[in-house]
Length: 423
Image (cartoon, rainbow, N blue to C red; front, top):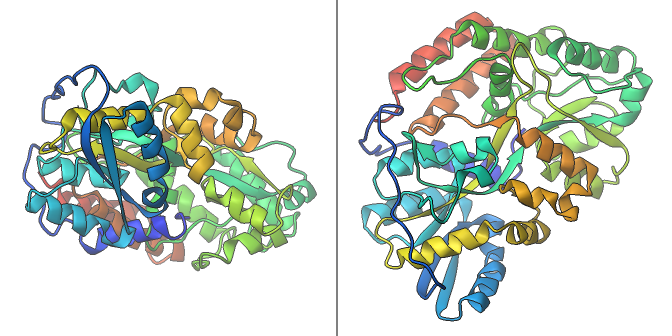
């Protein structure tokens, strides 16, 4: 299940222009890591221009004002960019060498824009890898070099109708694939749900639901040199994904956004997979206390989930590089990350921010924080969105039963290999 509006727009925008003009560069995994230049000490000064998308772009000025109070000789100008125009706007700015100092980038854009050579390398003296969730940090790493800093994150859990689970006799969250299948089956046969679970059956963004099964089974999408979408682990994971549709535990038809929430609260769906934004959506429908969260299960590997969010990057041709990185560093302070959560409900990418009572005191948010320790993103390669579109097409065939998991895995592997990494 993709995040409403801004996530949908992000995926649609990227897919629509998927690498129309891929830049050349080293093949992913073959390059040596570059080290960013140091940033001058002291307060920031001068003009700092920032582009940010959607709600974040509309609200970021609040943090910019706080930054300018601490750095009175600096002036931060934030431009809010609509998600559906963001990719083209950034690409055009790079081509025309008219970029801002700082830009927000969706995590799946990092590979593409890093390959253009337009992004500055993250300076290790101002931003430290160990401050962030590992999966989040990796979204900004291309060919071993860091070009983006995680700003906010999100991951996925299972939202479960409590009454349905109780009626089904489920007393604890399932921990592995077998127990998840049993729980979902019980929610349908004993709990009264029409569908024990809703897993997105193909179409845009379905890979975000299916790929965690691959990771949970010890598989990978890319090993640094080759795609591994037809490995035994990946094929077995697709068979598991398909089993929910074969066994009638999940509908084969896409449930439109906006209809999934009431169906869960009414008990028509026992569970669905989604991110932290659904807490607010369900509560707004009077669902508070009517649902619970389950962590992701494990196959033969770890209990991994998908990690998303957005990064902050600085352009190489920034007219105020020091000021730009000082602003990015400011956004990553734990107390600033907490304030940002309170402003727009974006989850902190900085691990220590989760120690704040605002987040640690909320049991549901804490579960998302715990899951972030075991969350992964797809490889940061320029062609990922083009590859993802192919995955979504094959996943729909798998869900509808028109293609076997093994054939889908082979097709995914062939498509991905044909597309390549854009290097």
